[in-house]
Image 1: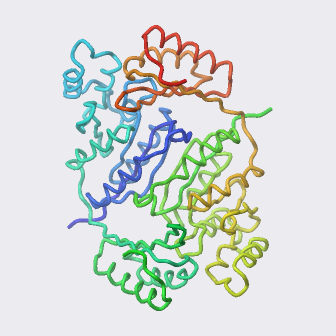
Image 2 (image 1 turned 45 degrees about the horizontal axis):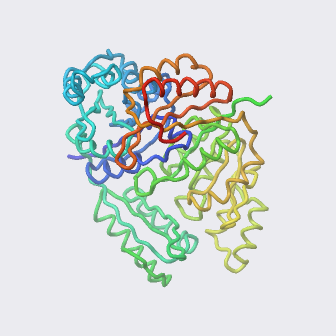
Image 3 (image 1 turned 90 degrees about the horizontal axis):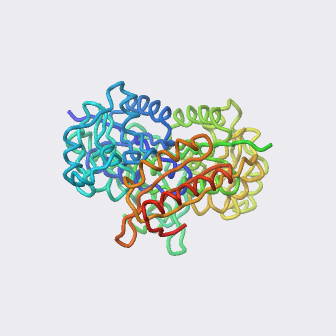
Length: 249
Length: 249
């Protein structure tokens, strides 16, 4: 029987922490895990390119969750230290991965296969490759840790190649109802419904502004489709009772 | 004498974790702290709306860093549990804040001041208000923890009102040089420069794709302007040596 499977994401990179670069990987990975694999992301952390901190977090998060995804720090420069840090975290050797070396050598050509580029073939011993259809340099999986690059377009092209390494969890069903109302108008009743279905359904309410109008998106999520339907039935009764206009179901 | 001041950001919200909503607050808060206050963000965490987890993280991060910023969970609905969780984290009462109550009562009018809206005036005892020019409901500071709402437009309108509560750190100078080259072409030399200036300057290199051309943005950051200039002088020598075209300095 399928069960709940969870994951954490570890974003490694000073450029995200400093606010210089807007992260786009968290929402992408999390949505993909949710919808394609039934895996829910329960924690995200953004940390600097500092070996000690990477090691600490890889150990902690890989123990705490079924999977850990890391992004960033697997390029050719001095600040790319994810691979060696993961090797140290798991106390395995950091060495050339034969197949990765061959892929990169073929991609760049023997003549242009510089030391920086060779560095991208060094991985924790025993790592399994995550193929990269857009720029060759593979990601890799060490124990339950999947390491992807930080550049969103490259990461996006690789994500499907993670699938074969993942055990799928229960599908998480989700329904969003967008209402023309304010949160405080439905807060009390929504709280009651949440209490009733506490164990089975998560209800979130998120204010929005669209075309000058104020509204609330009510998002319900559950691994049980019947329970999700029951909650949404009660929500519709509330909408009727309060005479709230619906923007979108 | 000014010294280094740091902060962490705690994003509270299932909608960010699930990937349904793209976070925009991390980059905004971090850039603002960096440029306006000389405060560097050293850790970011995204966690679900679960009381136990919020308490745990507020305790941990408020101890570990000079300031902790939280976003999300201060609205009127059942899933807004940031204020009571922070009260529990610091073992203080969760109660109506007199001034916040008055602000909200005035804003909504006595007749429309419902229970949900009143909830937004409940805070940890001793909290200091962070005024909200766009939608009235104030944020608040408890010890060294500053709590802001999750909606980016509202958060943005409030950020300047955090300033008076913050001790400013050393200004962090930063310079970005965008080059038409690939990372592996400069990796080795850049590594040498970084090693030489290890204690004073952080050098990051970030690949980019612009108008079909591949490039690398080299970002240098330091609290010492002279050291930053020295590093950039060496970087320019490297650019000359390798005959690299400059896109932007």
